[in-house]
Length: 206
Image (cartoon, rainbow, N blue to C red; front, side):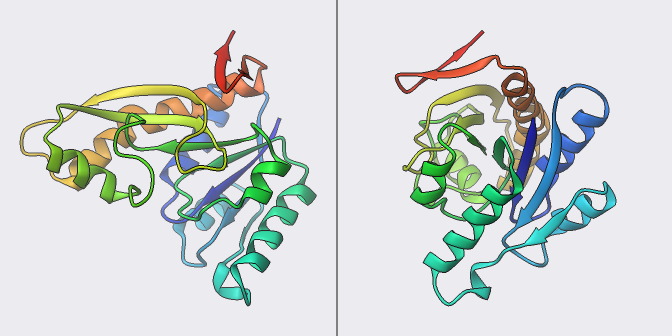
């Protein structure tokens, strides 16, 4: 299975995927392309170091958001990938892309959906929301992408305890280490090996 990984920043989830392919945790999978929406994304350096084709497609380089959406979607179609992995990609996915890749786009979200998700809940904002509400357990979710924000069918979730004295950054790191870097590679491996299907809007795992 060929995958494209879309990133906006440091690329820690990208690195987890690269490492888990290298050590055999993820099988039948190659990263064919990495796309960042931000030229300064460290994820592009991670890809280059691993010998993976990587490029920046930024909304800033297009006259309109529609032109950007078309360029991004066309590039992914051209690449011939089987699965698109959103690994900290802070761009709204256009409906056109969801149509072209039905149940072929997955996202990692740093909370237990349906809590702390949707509009405005991304990056550190999620963890700020968790701490402000005083919940005791948070986590991460891998889900398919549909036309909504964080509303697609859920593939995997993993819980992470919130600890006394946490601030958004310490909580973010714990959620990454204990949940994100494990369940995103796990979901990719399951999809690559034909163990995941979507029936009536729900994920069935064999």
